[in-house]
Image (tube, rainbow, N blue to C red; front, side, top):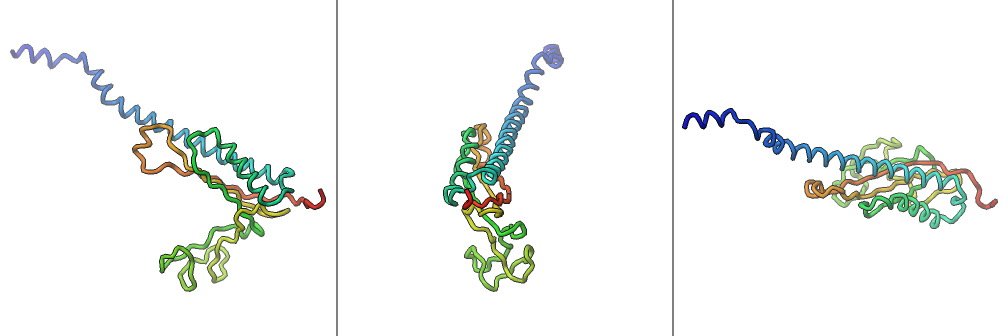
Length: 194
């Protein structure tokens, strides 16, 4: 009996299979993570390019001479069309905001919402970090306005990316949000001359 157990102790014929069974799930999870991260990065770069291209088209072509509502819709359609190849993207949020000058481009100043209504009320404490005028300043941008000749416009696109790798869908609680923005000055073309 002692001889048999001593012989089994030296037998390592299945050790490679056991080692592979231990390492394979970790290696597979790592590989799936790399694929998903690569897809997310590629989609983000494509969104950045789509927003930049829509902004270039809007300021450098005759699209600037159509009415504001049609121009805004053309820009939104351009970004959405560029991202159509990514079948897993849902619920696009595309906004345009026009500003008087580059110095006025800023988000609302942060404040402490004491009464919890979600907006700034007189007397609530705030951080005067942008204009530094001792007054709370909201975002001065005009929403859904493509700006006039020489105007400053901020284009922002936000998409919710569905995961392409099924196991990752079950691990994370939410899908990543991809966002791209660019700020440009419109060409100083007077459309009344055309």
